Image 1: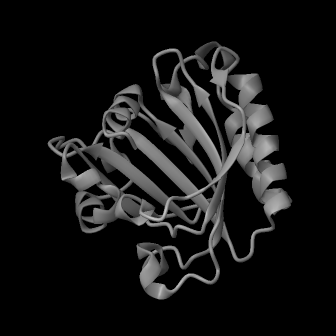
Image 2: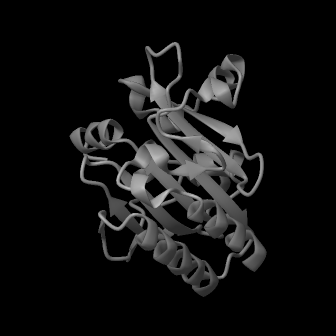
Length: 208
């Protein structure tokens, strides 16, 4: 696990400091906000893996659940519904582990956050917080109500965000309690997400 997180930090550290005020230059395994998802996946892959539980009622954006190709186990790739170029507006990646020790995940989160703080010096870093997911969260996200999250975010001047989070999933949840059981197998995970300012504004307007 230490080796994996060293690789994550190494990837982050390759960002050019002079460009660090723009989320466009932040990469997750080579993918960036503003890239075409077609550079990494086929159109049929993206369309066949669109997830209803993460598509915000198909009002404006769609999200595809894609398999990992390196460090991470999976990606969530979000783009406008009417965009034939599938330009990435938000990108999340998850590193899963059975019974991910909460302290271990939080320590790793702190290490990655410190590295991000050095790269993105002009962002506003929010305090780390822990909370339980609401019981009705599965209507929007595939999580059980008893699961807990520890997260922090880096806010760019234009409203874009990078979010780091540790998800501790409820191991006693019944199979029908969450869509997640058929997709992520209720594993704990470390997650990193990049959101464009447009996507952040959209979620804010939906109160998500």
